[in-house]
Length: 370
Ligand SMILES: Cc1cc2nc3c(=O)[nH]c(=O)nc-3n(C[C@H](O)[C@H](O)[C@H](O)COP(=O)(O)OP(=O)(O)OC[C@H]3O[C@@H](n4cnc5c(N)ncnc54)[C@H](O)[C@@H]3O)c2cc1C
Figure 1: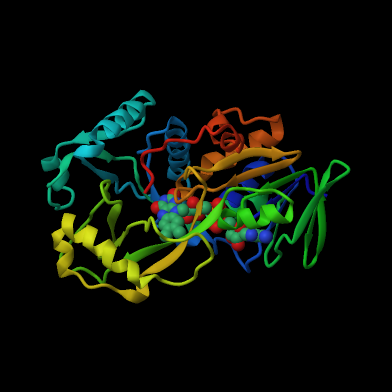
Figure 2: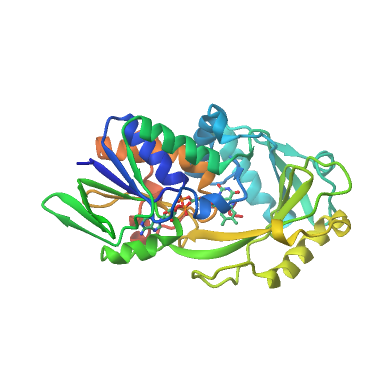
């Protein structure tokens, strides 16, 4: 019998399964799809950054990036994140910079002239820029494959095409039903991303996590050489980065209704480009590659930050990263394993991200959500 059942084989489930197996626990991973990384993990823009304003977000990303640096399969590339800071947000970002520096993570303050050496943009309305030289991109598929392979090597069992249909606590164990049978274990970890609200209902729990569709647009190969960092115009949320000879770009639609709405929302291309062209006029010369563009679900919570740790007897969550889970999975996997082993995460204090914050009304005020 497994000691821990991990539901979901995205990057969060995979990293958690690996750390639990590494600690010597018998682990069973259940995934509803036929293979791994078919949820948000396989559809992310793959960015990793320490540039957050909340200390816990900064540290989760920082320690995760350090881990990804040592895993060749994670495909980490330090192309950097460049934040273009509008005058209205200058105070907030100065404060974020102070917090980042107090935690010892590398973030530079750039003049607009210095920032323009990395990517050309119109300076109107901007105060300054910040650049994270440790920030960049990675390969979420590769990292997930690595964690699952290592978990298996350490004895974990991974079962695909086996959705959790129902689970209940009986006699100190979680009993989990799938279409193929049932399994029991003292610990149940839900790493079910955008589906966590739905999965919670089958357990009789209200978990405030819901899906919100997001688009990533891809250009055709550009007729000029470029190596742009992941650049975010913080005033509008428009971002772009180089990917080979193409550019990827996007912008979160604040009016996208929650729900499992599938497919590209081409109507959102107009407002995205409007914001993009205003800041980066060179985009005018590029054409879109519709077939290389894609969509996926952000797994959103009321304050756009994850829910971590125990939420009931033997029941743990690592979900709801609201669009920044890839870059934090490595450290969260370690923390969840500590939570199981010692009753409480030890390496970092995850109190701010526990479910109870929503009951207490102490929501996270993270300012760098993209
Ligand atoms: C367009 C887009 C861009 C993004 N860009 C970034 C970025 O640049 N950087 C970043 O860090 N993050 C980014 N993200 C967010 C990131 O992709 C997620 O935060 C992260 O992948 C969450 O991982 P997860 O393992 O929690 O979820 P998922 O990868 O969704 O995994 C959850 C798994 O649970 C499985 N599951 C669900 N229900 C059940 C069930 N009942 N039984 C069994 N299995 C089940 C699903 O099939 C899925 O495989 C982006 C997301 C999108 C959509």
